[in-house]
Length: 231
Image 1 (cartoon, rainbow, N blue to C red):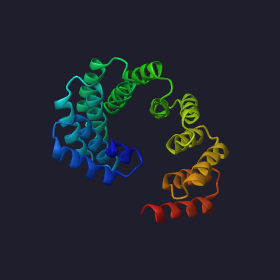
Image 2: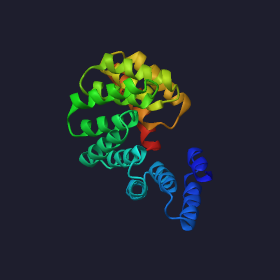
Image 3: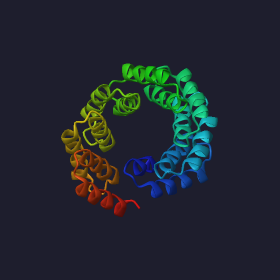
Image 4: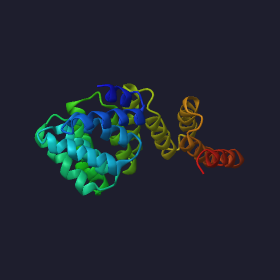
């Protein structure tokens, strides 16, 4: 319990310590392996996370959450065939697992199957219309297909559900740039920078907006600032 609370609070290293202590006492605790996997995943230690999620799934082979955690991690590792396989297992175990449809969609997208990916995101939204990740992923897919206006609708929905989703705000700005709506795009990037001044992506994207308006010196300044933040 404490390990999960610490993980939720962003205390990932402490969470790992408590998981290890729990597993020393009982190494058949699927929940502890899942929580440890979550903490490792949050630290971008995906190979280690995968090992723990797999142990959890071995202990609870009928648990859709376990299979979906494995699918998510394979997506993070860009192993899309494996991600697809485990997301389908998760769906088979629970046809109402909206997150599993998101992971299946992301895997299909990685495999270039954009139409099928879009179907998965739509199915996820049908099951749970309150999950902002679904609309964020769908928006990015639509933008990659050149459907910027539809993408913006998705990003707006994601932001309605989670106003602090800076990734969705950056992506909305990118789509506005694609439409030539540079001032509106800049407004998005400035909102991001107002909440996270060291967001290198927002600096670069704002620079693109300025460059497209012929404001070259301002654009160069922002690029330099982005390089200071993330060399």
